[in-house]
Length: 232
Ligand code: SF4
Image (cartoon, rainbow, N blue to C red; front, side):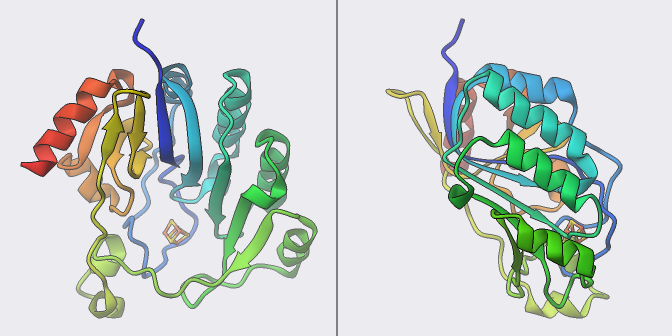
């Protein structure tokens, strides 16, 4: 059996569902797709360690069952991220999400962060959620008005924010054969594909230009091929 890989920076698109339609959203219109448990199982079986783990979407609070399954699976497989990060819009299921993360992530609250988006693009959260955030040691309310990439809804011509877009950041993907470690921003999408970087709309992801491989085929050879492809 091939040795399992170490991933320095992994972002998991847990769902493409969302309960909002923010004008700046780089993902574009929501889709009724949530990561499958078999994709999570494959990840857990192919990966040895993840250093920084981010859960994104879509809106993660609409996939609490999958987050619970993932975090419990990490424990069973002895995968212990050093840092954990998740952003939610805080409109639904905040306390359930916070409980799952509090019980599941097993690292210090200092290194765990759940950010509730409150900025000109997101509607206000309720007073009830505000007080739950205050009681949750690893949760905070985040103001992040500057992240507009040339993707998704921010790209749409009819959107006044389309003038404020920035180019998508480029990502360098590297690996170490010696330690079987993948460096760079690796993104596992809700369909189970590994992508080079995470600042893409669903549409761009599905065009496949940045796809490294399906998670079921994760091995260092795929990375060698992908890096060669992007560098030439
Ligand atoms: S920015 Fe987040 S909350 Fe807003 S539409 Fe996009 S995924 Fe949903």
